[in-house]
Length: 174
Image 1 (tube, one colour):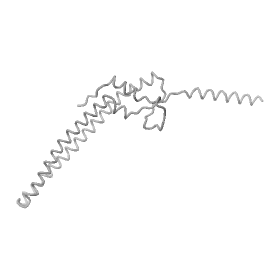
Image 2 (cartoon, helix red, strand yellow):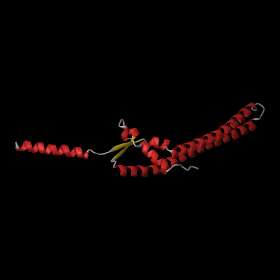
Image 3 (cartoon, rainbow, N blue to C red):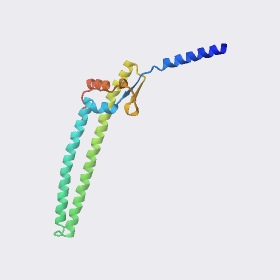
Image 4 (cartoon, rainbow, N blue to C red):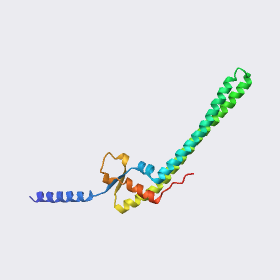
């Protein structure tokens, strides 16, 4: 009988102590939403989109000029001597290579600028998240994309976006 009472007492304390430690607050954060819907994120996206469109317009003009030059060269093929035609094709190839290099360079610059803007945004978001964690006694923050389900009460995305809009309203890209 002594052992049975001891077993019940130990079991009771284990159950009570484990439920006391289970009171940890876990929240989720949709980082993609924070990056895209904050004022700074929207401004950065608009800037990069405008720059992409400007580059595309410039490159499409170059592409049209190269196509026109190619058709002109093909029309003159029968008129020109072999040497002149080969010189024309060589210069056209060089221009096409320059066009491709410029296209690649502009896309690389945009990708680099996008990555830099993302890093700046994340560096501004991290202290906001840290302060929110400390103020609200949160033990764990999970990315929303890695969570299958949960209560809307545990989603802190809108709160973080609001804080970010107050503390970091613009993203200065050049």
